[in-house]
Length: 328
Image (cartoon, rainbow, N blue to C red; front, side, top):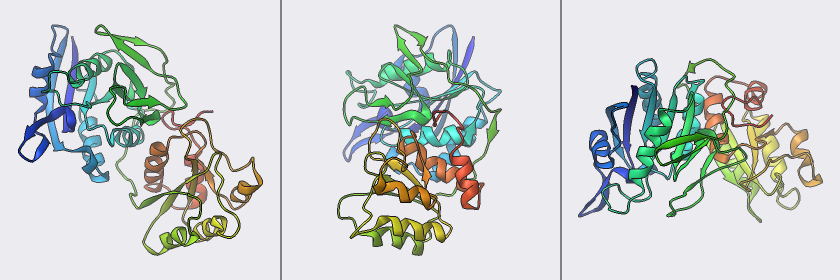
């Protein structure tokens, strides 16, 4: 018999109508009963952690969630974490690093519509996640709309559709259909289990747009920011005359603030080395996010800054694949 622990944090799946709108009030045990996930082959235990809209899930909650999951290692065969969809990809990415090499499957799921609604996707998603958590090898995953995605490769790409998440630059792990989890790709396991909630949340994410003032980047030095992720155009380009962002990034790096360059494009890798307009970024030492998602880049930078205290150390770890977030 498989032992699965369900940890509830709120989100749309747990919402019920109130006079002030939808509010996440269903407990983990109520969700299990409502969704009909129990079977003779499964033993499901329940933990209620939060009853929160995921828009309010922040680094403090990530640490609590990670501690809760860690407490289940060695106790159960898999963990299912119910979570709101809006920040689920951020949480899945951060847990991929905090729970590096976790030996049991940790499967996040939720819903676009409350489980109490007759047409809710939440009932299927929760049962699918339980099936995935009883089948998969160790790692952090998102199970949604019948698809299983590596946690640090998932991005929410739709606001209301039932297939809300996509796997970016990485194969889908599995599909769940008719109560069975069918594996498609097994992620490699490089590291043994290492747990840490030491992170630095003082990180900025800046999306470059035509005409953006370089002073916006310069201002980050004065407000306690410890690291920056910059979303450039295409492969990673940005203005280098009239409004010279390269010089602003040079000043950030000189101040000891690592800058990670990623792309505004969802798919394929970014690099500053191809075009003249961005070649100088490579010369000044900007760190390329390569094919990481923005969610993975921002959470990994927070995690790296919790253990590295100079730009070269940050560069080395950012350029090392920890949980499948980087292609070789």
